[in-house]
Length: 305
Length: 329
Figure (cartoon, rainbow over the protein chains, first blue to last red):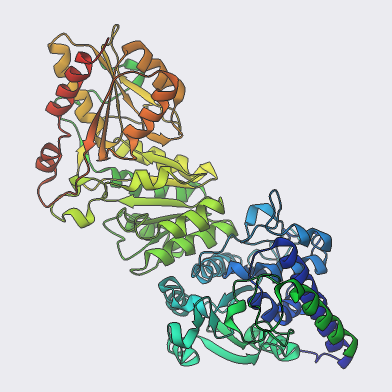
């Protein structure tokens, strides 16, 4: 891997900030939806769409693209915003989120929006789908051992599968079934990315249903685990690179994130899990000022960058 | 009389060949896999009793053992279908689609990908395993999911053909299978097309149209033959595709007779008879009697005695025909 230049890191940070502004705008316009998770994952989605993923916004069905499966569909505003900024569709379309007739459903639907790899929302089923996808792709790689398929094209199945998951959905049995499966079949073309933000709708994960020690659990299931600061873009990109060198196991990137990251008043506050700006807790910012305060804060951050 | 167009086996009332419908799956899926290398088969620790082991032997590299984890199996299959494979995933119907219904709804139904849910051991004719393993609700569960086609084959041969057809359909399918060996009525020449019901027994002036699905089609034919001896004319239509229904054939046969009996090894609530009744209520309301399980769970026993105990034998069909005739006019 060629390390990022300072200039490249600054550009990615600026992009992440722009994506956060779009998230606040689209949630405000929608009047419903989740705020904390999308803001907390803005740095990782920026890294994915602007550095890590092999993809083409103008050709979303490109056979060789890396597949990004979003398991916890409720944070999809961050994906919509990142896709729009990457050129999949106009950024203005983000303001149709959750509205009648929009391609931007409250929880993502595959056949409504090109580039959306699967339908999700009900928690716990993304890692299994990603595992099935990675398994199927590897079947074709094994079947076509030569570097080319003879028609001058690349081998089918020659891509990586990334699965973004929440920490809360590790309370679902289906997730652990998938961890067993991917470990058994040594799906080295699969990378799980866990948004370890420690909150869920009803409170902190370790109060609702303790999940730790997550690293030990994954390692016991035969995964390679890399822990990163989910807001350190170069560190996350380096972890994705490291995963490519792990040939005998699937990799989990355990990304420690701050829910609501970027808006000081709401960072780490679980009460912002399921509310949009304008409908969140009012003890710090009155409801009618929330969107404005959030956007001003993000713009100020942008100027400092 | 047996319709010559149905090209049924010659000896079905004498010494019919016996085979379970799931055996038809086992053969059909190997044929489908031979014809199309995208076909893969998954199982959840039930390779032999789902008959998936035939495919496992023929194509070991395309067989995926998921362990006892039906939710994972359904969603792994969804991922494989997203990639471009044609996965058949197999377990008992009480577990799949019973336990993993939401995963099927979201990741296969809403996603609209061609994964094929194979629910074995449907009906009380599972026998000694008892109520926990006798799926009586699966067709109701699956016909309620948009995008899904629902198929319940009448015998092993039809099951073989249905499996080959399902692999080519390109959309989500639920296939229902039985454990017990039952008469093989159809032949390689019997027409089969997904969504096209087949009239197996016809009459010039029928008093009742019997619509049946699954292996009880044979009991319906036995009933038709017995009723013929009592000068009561009926037709028997094999409705292997429970969704989408063959509206044209069903409405034609229903209108010709003016009364209907439905036959299935499933709960009456939400099942095949309900589907027929929904269609008739809208298009040609007429008296209907339902053969099936009336809001009860099964129990251990031998398949034949259980089918009789729960009111789905030949004598029950004969009685239902007579009852529905009495309700006409």
